[in-house]
Structure formats: C-alpha cells, structure tokens
Image (tube, rainbow over the protein chains, first blue to last red):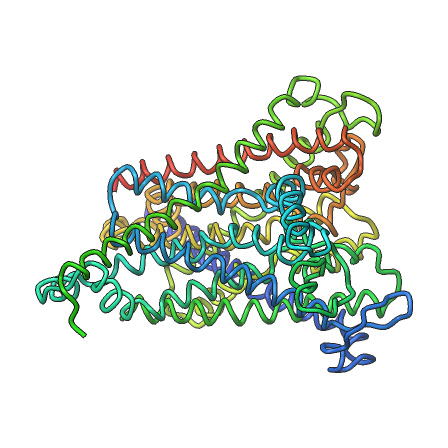
Length: 304
Length: 281
C-alpha cells in the first residue's frame, strides 16, 4: 500500500515536471520564431546590404533589368498611402470612440454599431481589394476625368481610401475602451461647474485620453504600413516615381508590401531577391517599432 | 471668453450631430461592400460551383472545389500546430507572469501580432519552400499557424487571468497534481474564452492571402498532396480577380461570397461564445 502510493506520486511528479517543461518550451518557441524571423531577413538581405549599402534607401530608380535598385519610390508610396489613409480615418475613429464611449455606451444601437465596426475589421483584405478594383476604381476614374487628371483609376489615392476604411476599427475599438475609462468624478465635476457636453469632451475627456488615442492612431498606422493585398490590387504597381505632386497622389505607385507581393516570385537573381527582402526587413522593423511604442503607451495608460 | 449658455448649448448640439454623423457614415462602405459581394456572388454559387475545378477561360461553368478543399486542409493543418502551442504558451504566460521568459515571450507575441503578413510569407519561404525545393501546402499551413498564434495566446492568457485564484487553490489543496489542476480545472473553466480565440484566429487566417503567395502558391487542379502546391480561397480570388477574363471574374465573385460567408459565420460564432461565457461568469 505504502509503496504503491509512493510510486503513484513519483509518476505524478514526473508528469508535473514534464508538463512544466512543455509550457516553458512552447513559450521559448515564440521567442525562437521572432529571432528566426529577424535572422532570416537579415541573412537573406545581406547581399543587397553589402553591395548597395545605405544609399539603397534613397536610390530613386528601381530597374531590375538594369540591376539598379532604389527603395525610395516604395518608401514614398508606403508613407503616402498610410498617411492619407490615416488622415481620412482619424475623424471617423475618433467619432466612433466618442459616440460609443461617451454619448451612447449602452443599448441595442450601440451594440449594433460596435458589431458593425468589428465586422469591418473581419472582412478579408482581398475582398476589399476585389471590390475596390471593380467598384471604386471606375468611380475614381470619373472623378479624375472631371478634375482633368490622367484617369488611371488605380493609384495611391484609391488605395488610401480603401486602406482608411480597413484601419478605422483598430483606432476606434481602442478609443472606446479608453474613453469609457475616464473616471466619472472628473466628468461630474465639470458638469457641476456648468460645462456643456461638448466642453466636457473637449476639456476633460480629450486631455485625459490624448496619449491613449494617439497610441490607437499608431496601431492603425502599423496596420496600414504592412497591409498588402488590397493595396497591391489598387495601387497600380509602378516603380517609377511621378514628377508632379498631383500625379504622385492620384497616379499609380507601389508600396513596400505590394512590390514584394508582385515581384518576389519573379526575382530571378540573388541581388534582386535580396533587395526585395531588404524591403521586408525595413517593413518589419518599422511596424515592430510602431507597434511596440503603441502597446507601451497603452500599458502605461491602463496601469495609471 | 464666456459665451452665452444658448450658444454654448448649440455648439454642444452641433458637435453631437457631427460625431453621430461620422460614427454612422462608416457603416455605409461596409454595407455597400457586403451587398455588392452578395449580389455578384450569390448567383454563381450552386452545387456545380462547389464541386468542380475552375474551367479554362472562355468555357462556361467551373467551380472552386480545389480552393475549398485546399483552404480547409491548410487551415486544419495550421490549427493542429497552432492550437496546442498557443494554448500552452498562453497558460505559461498567465501562470508565470513575472518571469523573464514570460516577459520576452509576451514581447514576442506583441511583435508577432504586428508583423505584416507578407513578411511571414517571405520568412516561411526560406524556412520551408527553399529547403524542400517546392511550393507546398505544408509551407502555407506553417505561415498560417504563425499568424494564428498571437490571437490564441492572448485570448488564452486573458481568459485564464480572469479566473479566480481560489479555484486553483481549492484544487491544489485537495492534493491534485499541478498539471491536472491546469488541464482538468483551469482550462475547462476558461474553455469558452479559449475557444473564442481559436474561432477568431481561424476567421482571421482563412482570408489571408499574402502569406500564401510565396508558400502554397496556387494550383489550378484538384490536389490533396500536402507536399505540393495547393489552391486556397483567397488566392483563387486574387488570381481570378486580376485576370482579364469575365468568366474568371464571375468565379472570383462566387469565391468571395463563399469566403465572406465563412468569415462572417466564424465571427458570429465567436460573438455567441463570448456572450454566453460572460453570462456564466
């Protein structure tokens, strides 16, 4: 009897140790994935880093046939699409955050709106791209004809519009949570002093949540920078950079993600491929830094 | 400086109006997109469409059976890898929040959540496709599994953190070994939360195209070989949407409709699970 119990506890102990080891191993796997991603990207972009140097980032010409590689057109394309999308999306995501956080936090209407916004994030980007290609592009083309611009239809502006819709939920859902966290004594105090609702929002809620809402903007920027499929289908995919500002905004372009998506499987020599991977490396660094800053701000905000 | 209360009230009302306008206007693009996809896609979908492979351009008919089966196989394989890893890692993070390893793997989850899906595609290309020498469904599944991990880990971690400590203490005080406490008490209690994380992650990756571009690629024929190229729903949409043939566009609308139905269903399931769970708590 004694012996049996001892054996049992021994085997249980073994299982317990094994279980703990499995847990630790699974967490280590995560760290290994990230380190692996980083090492793979750096190693594979080494040929391009070595032979093109840092000047690669502002080289203006991308011509794989002549073996000339410059990332500048893609950096411009990525920054432009993301920032236009951000500018369009911010009023919407702030409005949603204020409406669902302050004006109407409960009830069926607020539930409905909240679910709809979550649905916007759920629709796959390929579907936005496909829809944009067949519905939005003709609309933009007519608009461009009326504005006397070359009617490409596809281009940086078109991609930005779709991108704006896609990133609204990220800023909004965080904003809702943050605005609901504003302590009610603060708001009540302002009301007691005779402030109107608008004044409470502007002078109490906004200052209180400013950094948090900024973090939401950062997170949606991170999304926008890395978004691939919808942008690839709508941006027109030209690696040449237009001369006038109007042509840059409305004309076709390319982002870092879209050029990788388009040319990766076609890249037929080492330097070409590794130049593309270096773009991926830059994209990885930029999105990681933006995301971590955003997350850091949010953690600090919610802990206070 | 101090305006009359009347003008201040009007200002407040105008602001409310503007906020409501912007908040609701955003539902319009979603409704337009959904209605358009349904209108274009629903007429394409029939039994023939679901059970046949794509027809060459110019020929009527054809379907997306290869993409349906391919998506199913790849998401299934990705889930088989990502669910256990994700749940165990989530358990570790919620059980040992203060260790160094938890800090670094938590950081890695955050990073992984922000990594653009196209970068995952590149990396898996060098990890799997290049060594094997061919694009394959295995590579596609690994890419999808990496995309699923952060969602499953975070939902597991957050669900388990919400459970009261007394639950675990009660079980431990009865002499139940640690691993059984976790697997038989803690995990079943947080089951709904973990499940909702899983359905959400599946909903997310079933529409992912970018990581599949360099891994599973695509396949015009019906294939069950996991070491070979395999078609998937989002990839079939991408190829046919950007093709010049009208017949293929129709095929892509039908595929978009099916994909949308999958994604929306999975999201609704997630909603139902979380709602039910919150009531129970």
